[in-house]
Image (cartoon, rainbow, N blue to C red; front, side, top):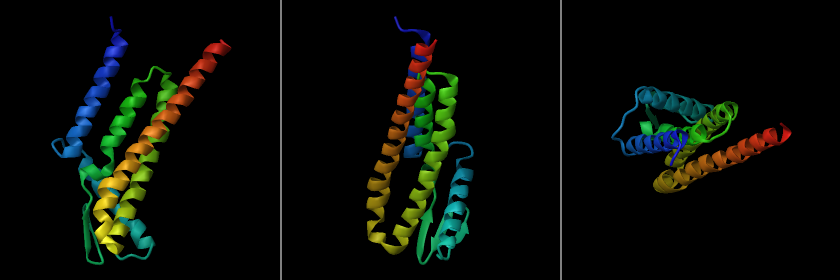
Length: 169
């Protein structure tokens, strides 16, 4: 018979996957996601201006040099962060280890996503014929792979810490 802990873990991960899928296909709109998209657009626009690219911002819409991009809810990587967080939270390790996964992993994913958005804007300006490939194939693969590898590295570390603590006791 399954323990309550296992059932809770399965439910949490399943719910996270369902919500993340809904966000990805646009059927679920998270409260505050629009603010995240506007913030991401603003930071990306500022980065482009630092690089010498003239930018015009209107909410989550960035336009520059004849190129227009809309930073949508799906561009914030919230689905990936949700799945990463759920996977970290359901692991049977200490609360400290899970908190560390969130405190390091979420900002790392946000920073990588910022690099993704800025690079896609630059590709859209300079090489618009390659934008779809970069956006839908390359960066999607990089983001998911990075989140999975980060989680695996953290998981290995967390289990080693737990094992060492048990051996020391």
